[in-house]
Length: 263
Ligand code: MF3
Ligand code: CO
Ligand code: CO
Image (cartoon, rainbow, N blue to C red; front, top):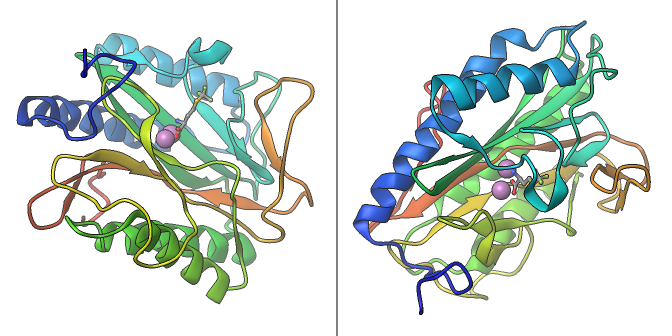
């Protein structure tokens, strides 16, 4: 009983990693599919229906968020000051100048693929574009150092350093996570920290890195209305990018890479 859902192993077998690759690819494909629909005038409820239909009927997967701890929809849509876990809503229509994270997690053959990206709605505003780019660079800098022997604190450190060097802040209240048969498993991947601290990465680990970076304070508040939506307390913009990756013998492989990326 060491490999049940209550005590998942942190090191996956090559058979499990093969399944994680399939799930990761399909999650990435869902983000590629939805891009064309992200336009001023569409509601986040409609984006959820399009993704749900694609995930269930086109790629034969399960949308992991749906009913996860009571979450009511199949994707998360987090707009502007929303940090994460925004709930798609037919009454939230995208406006020119909005920025939005869409977070997709699919389950294929029992394994999860979890990934998110930022979208610009209509015109890109320079201050938003800069936040979104730096946040993506934070993710890429973290991925670059992932290999056996890297410490978890090194991942947090490179993200925090790049964010703070650019006068942004790193959200502390939510983190990346181990992933496999279980959506959120050990280890926790903090997006801040100190070099050469924390657990060492080992080949076969699978986890997400998903930095949430704010224009103002790092502090967040949870919506009292829906119990899910996380917002910045100062109401300023937040951005997030997420990949699922696995540690290889000499580096890492990003399981949720999109064709627009060179990873
Ligand atoms: N996909 C999110 C993550 O990156 C989790 C969403 S959980 C939900 O970990 F319930 F809000 F959908
Ligand atoms: Co995640
Ligand atoms: Co996610």
